[in-house]
Amino acid sequence: MFNNKDSSTSNNISSSAPSKLDTLLGENTKIKGDISFNGVLHLDGKVSGSILGAQNDDILTISESGHVDGKIEVANIVINGTVKGDIIASGKIEVASKANIEGNVYYQNIEMNTGSRINGQLIYQKDDKTNKITKIDDKKSK
Image 1 (cartoon, rainbow, N blue to C red):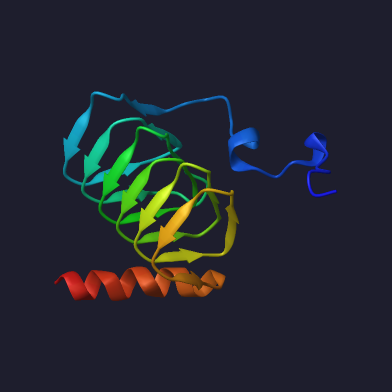
Image 2: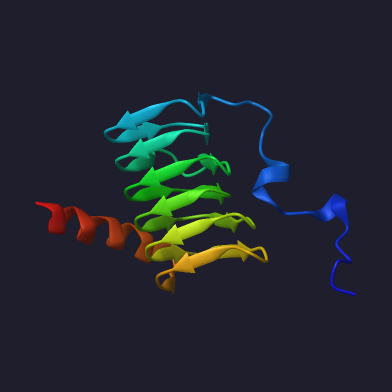
């Protein structure tokens, strides 16, 4: 009844993501500082800093062992790890069953699986509001 999904029409980022992986940060990798990327970034390690996807079709995947302590601003994101900070997504957010998010989530399209946790506000944004949020956050940091 509820799991009647036809896999050929699935609209998940994780299943429709291109097979090309541009950047992989391994489980034993720890980065202190901000990251800006293009394409597909897969995070198994820990990042203490902001992550910014530079284009409107970028994809960030955070595995179960992945951890981000900072703001994330990207088009599309799949989260199965831990995020401590706000998330701004201009495309789709997939929150997997092992995800733990502590921060506000600004979204246009979100999918949450059973077992995922968000401790913060879910704030729906229209296309034009996502850019305004970024500009407001930039002014606050100055």
